[in-house]
Length: 110
Image (cartoon, rainbow, N blue to C red; front, top):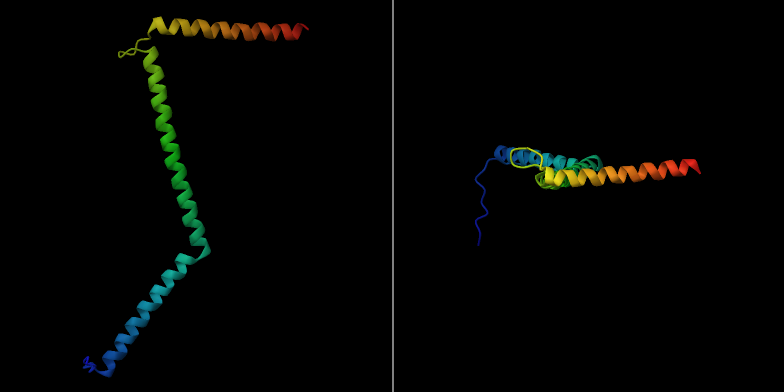
């Protein structure tokens, strides 16, 4: 059989009850704040913003890596252009622009 005798005074018991009520009130206030619609919406917005930031960060890293890889194809370690690779690309670009210019001028004449 368990010992059910309480050696506390009535004042101590009342003080314990008062402390427990205060703790319970604080807990209920915290729960109320957590389940409030504005809090839920704010938390959802923060999560979405965090996910977007993470996605944009990954995209930035991938684009930066791709640009660095392309740059490495046309520039040597010292930063000087690799003319054997730059010239053919430049000639192709000039040719494509020239074709667009010719096709545009032919359309205007018609």
